Length: 180
Image 1 (cartoon, rainbow, N blue to C red):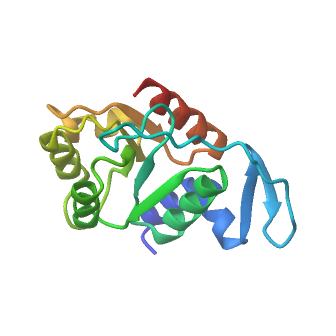
Image 2 (cartoon, rainbow, N blue to C red):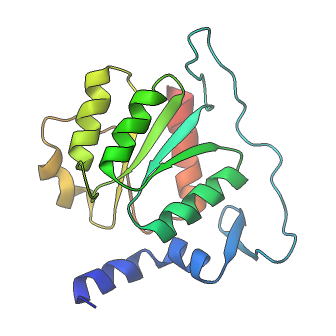
Image 3 (tube, rainbow, N blue to C red):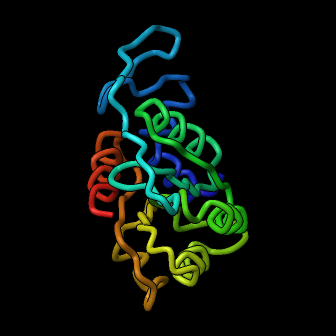
């Protein structure tokens, strides 16, 4: 295994470990064995819709774009447990296809920086070309400064560095969805 990839995998262990050990986050920061009946959060995001179909407030669909399948599954599952609706893309091409098909329903895009197929920059450019104004949260194991040169001239709304805790991601999502 390439040492860089190994280091990046270790950096992402917070969420990947959840999949490897088959554990879920029941509440922000807490880990509960999935075989047990841990506490369920019953007050997820409310889903209100405008007459155009665009979701308001903190509601709507999260388009999660992540090429590492274990991380994609773990984050999706954890966000769904928190009451969010999530659609998944494992590459840039699928992300753009989902963005075009569900433009009026997507409230936020959680976008990994390194993707197969279309690049994350191309996904961002397509989101902006469509003119939907959907906020984007970039995510990477690299620092924000380390990836800025790849996104010069493209609007990036937010950034969260991997590994991140579920509570941190949920707080960021709530802030982004309340502001939109």
